[in-house]
Image 1 (cartoon, rainbow, N blue to C red):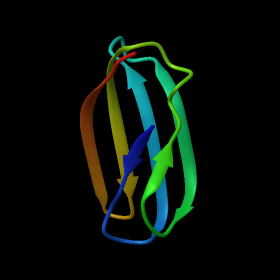
Image 2 (cartoon, rainbow, N blue to C red):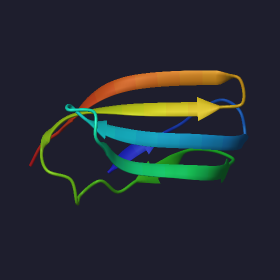
Image 3 (cartoon, rainbow, N blue to C red):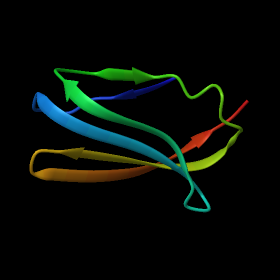
Length: 66
């Protein structure tokens, strides 16, 4: 499980990409606080999370392990 948290409520776009650039997961909608993302269906490896809100873009690398 991955928890994403940001400062402002409103429209949000979250995406998870593999190390090769393939989109593995995505969400678009409204959010008002922390979001818990179940990525247990993905194999272990390096991933990139992008978070886009109204006026903000953030990217973070993370590792999934067994």
